[in-house]
Image (cartoon, rainbow, N blue to C red; front, side):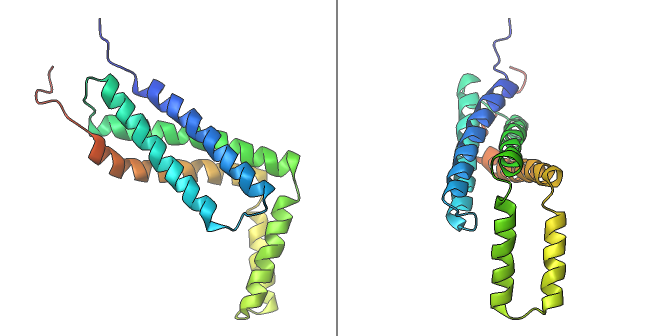
Length: 173
């Protein structure tokens, strides 16, 4: 019998954990009205790196101390997809059902910021706000969040898997 662990099971487990962590970070960010605070972006990135490392190390441990580069990329990509699905669904749900005014408040802050810079005309600011409103639809927000998380996770996995991989001396074992 083959006792090789499943990359999918490991990725699903850690993707769900990371998704819940990102939901908690997002909830704190929304409840404290800190959506422009870069600290939350750093927390999100740090959590993603930590969970990718933990997932790949767990798989390597379960696999007798070995993990190929492609297995690491697979774990990272699936973990990121699960995380993106959970966190994007929560953000969309929050923005549509719980607090539909959050996007309007963000748009007002963005307008104030552009006006304070003083290097754009009123027409340019209005045009920028018009484009921003088009990109705030729930469907676009969900898709952008999902694919943004997948891309970021995959790029991080390219780096992390290179350090965590450990190939067998004989690939036919």
